[in-house]
Amino acid sequence: MEASRFLLDNGLRLVHVLDESTEMVHVNILYGVGAKNEEYEHTGLAHLLEHLMFEGTERFPSFDEPLEEAGADSNAFTNNDFTNYFISLPRRNAELAFCMEADRMCNLVLDDEKVDVQRQVVMEEFKQSYLNKPYGDVTTLVRKMAFKKHPYRWSTIGRKLKHISDVPLEVVQDFYHRHYTPGNAVLAVVGNISFEQVKEWTLKWFGSIAARECVKREIPAEPRQQRMRRMTVQRNVPGNALYMAFHMDSFNGKGYYACDVISDIFANGYSGRLNERLVKRKKLFTRVDAFITNNEHPGLFWIYSRLADGVSYERAEEALWNELEALQRELVPRAEMEKVRNRFESDQVFANISGENFAANLAQAEWYGDVSRAWRETDMYRRVTSEEVMLMARELFRRGNASVLYYHAKKK
Image (cartoon, rainbow, N blue to C red):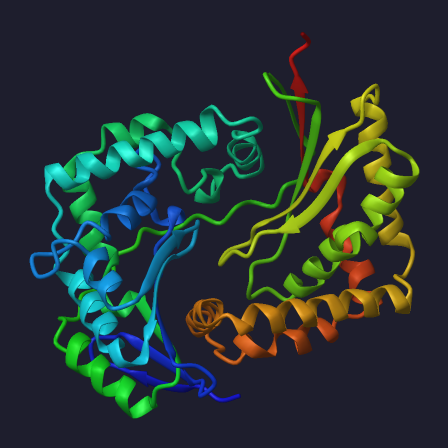
């Protein structure tokens, strides 16, 4: 596979992959702004602005209507590092996506009425997903415990509901103008369309947007955690839960792929070690899972679990530590490593079948400086050895690197 790339004078990066197997074109634009770029007293802005980007411009007062008429599908997501927008539409209407994305990059209408509408939407999402949903505050609690300096200590939705309800219009406008700049964006295009055509439309619609410096605040590095951190809460939830988080490498870090391999060794479906040994065999948990965060800066390796009835937290945690420490002493057998590698390969193949997913992966890979990672990740996982897994486990699962949350269900 080969990607074509082009850098506009205003700093916008274009990356393109031809896919002749489809009549669809997938246009993805990634902005290098997420929750980590917010101020401590003004959080939730990146996510709020994602909603506002669909409120329209003077030229397109309704962003969705012209796309629906063109047979397009569009959506977006925000995380701690990026805000990502995508439009998938038939090739014959593809230029519309370039026109509309360029227009809202520089001409978004931000007034009190529009901000108030989306403020209410986001506040309701905050309540439903974080405040009133069972276990909904887990991410907030663990992040706050694990991070003391880095802005990963708050979730994308924001630290407080008040930060959304009370944010001044001028703060929203300033955040947009500082971060939604051509030099802070990657435009990725995948589909049955030539690079020459994509380049022509990119220059036509984005080329005239003035270059602006993306002013970002300095983000403090998180100090190395030396002591275990613990927290106990009680909530109105169906059952007791136990969460553990460990600081790990960033997406560009040397140990990233080894950490991801470890998460799959532990939680590779029903055959993962934690499910096989602690759920099926010992019946200590009803569910155990492990996953990693895909972060631009060092993130977290998570383990979350639901305790079986009658099992104490002390017994459950000890069983988890036994599994974590076994990985530090014993090499993973060749067959188990091969099973994990095969799972990664099949997951990547199926994920990249979706043009939307591939365009998003392409944009992220370009942002990180190696566009080939969008289709080369299987090879990178296959290079991880059992020895690397053992060494990474020793560093990752230091007791001083752990943040542990006991999440008690209220007794009826």
